[in-house]
Length: 324
Image (cartoon, rainbow, N blue to C red; front, side, top):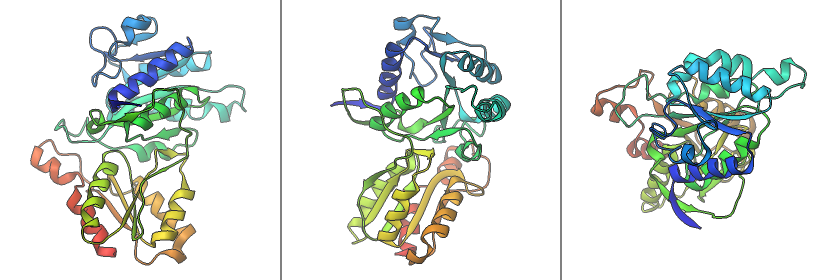
């Protein structure tokens, strides 16, 4: 095991897969020699693998996604980076109408083995065009797999699984977890999609969340333990496929559920998860399900307003206390 940041673990996973399979190549804005990516995830890879396999692209998200789809269906394995998840809106046809549907529409005669890496979430004061959490858009698109790693040890195993998957994967990261450190195995390993991880065992309430909210939930769990409240924290790791079994078993044990994401509230992934539990575990619920989300507004640029917009530990703790 080696302690490394989320960023370095992700880079290590990309490097291992590029060494393993020469069909794997990267493309995106400023990912090459001159910059190494906006968040420095691809730093050093162009120097090792060359500009043919680490390709800087024009500032055109639809071009990046379209080129990745074309490369994937003709035998390559592209890992395309969209600098900010908000800007996938400029490539929605390529991602959601083409990549996601091709296997189905062509009767299985082709697959689209591409990975679309992008970054969601606020906390950097870079305003509404660069701070949204839009994972529900892609969870709603049949044919796409959606990974949401929150920890360094997961991001390495999941990126390797994503690259080896024959179907398109939206691989979502969060701006505020890149510098978080964790022990990461030195040996090669893969993490299967659709297997959530219980980050903390508990008996009184289940908290399910994504990205930075998992980290906040763990902090809240430590705080509430001093009050005698036992919190179980679940990290889904992927949204598609979604590990319903782990979630349902946890709710049956605790009888209570709080769902926490940085998405705006209406139509968020938390709504789908709440509906799933309502349908499959209603008889085990001892209290109403609580959702903790951002308000239904654009992400503010103002630092104090953005701090208010993003769910914090206080709001998570309050939701837990209300139902325990």
